[in-house]
Length: 189
Image (cartoon, rainbow, N blue to C red; front, side, top):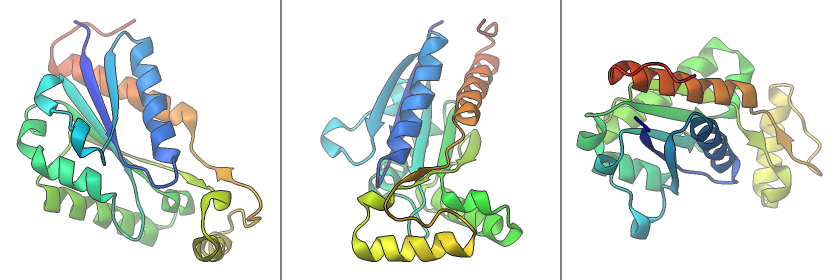
């Protein structure tokens, strides 16, 4: 059975779109049929019931996730509950390896799940990027101060990517194995 998988993402500067693309490429290499859609596109609103499984990816900004993703998940929570799903949270805070920050990130995810009425089968937190060159001057200043506090890169003339691509690909394979277990399918080779 070739699973049909939807990856719905929300992005602010583009890193989550890249992560969604890496997830899709890994799943396609295992013969999955994958659609990747932006969560902010109400005209092209994908319907979860047309898929065997769904991955939602969004990035943390100002203590929450993109509005389009929140709205889509809330609108489709019932359909999502009936199939294997995953949520990928993209956030630089994961790099801190700080119990307080980890607790804050967990609270942000929990609030998202409570307000949308959705509980994914599995979750993953992935480090994002610091695209200083895409920020306006104020956001660049704020992000530089935050980066300095946690000993991250502060040269605002260039961008920094912290995503562990091997980990992203491993998560996609883990999701596919979960799907196969749920459907009683032999593992993909």
